[in-house]
Image 1: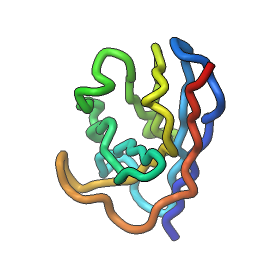
Image 2: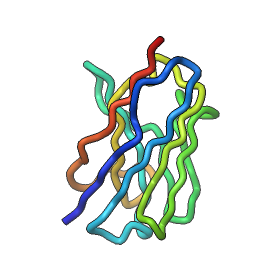
Image 3: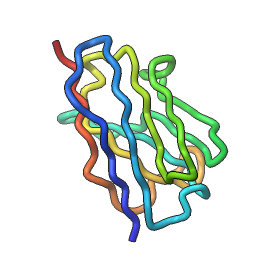
Image 4: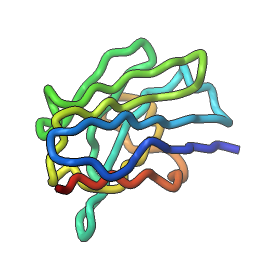
Amino acid sequence: QVQLVESGGGLVQPGGSLRLSCAASGFTFSSYYMNWYRQAPGKQRELVASISSSGTANYADSVKGRFTISRDNAKNTVYLQMNSLKPEDTAVYYCNRVRALGSAPIGSWGQGTQVTVSS
């Protein structure tokens, strides 16, 4: 059974940092791209960052230069380091696996982790 468990969210002031984690199980983690998505209230879920099985990263323009995606294939975990946070980064953050860059996420979603950027 595939499981994705996101953690690390919280309340942070503008300009602050958070590190999100996503622990995956139930599939061959190292064989998939892993993506981070976010969904703000009243908005559609959007792709934030993607990382290939070998570590090549891609980012949405809105987070480029501020967020860093990484993965540890030995721990079946993908991370999202978020720096210089802005109020518009407030959202529930989710991870999911995809077969290739730009392809649709596979299967169900985890519970997500809430990130709130506010003074």
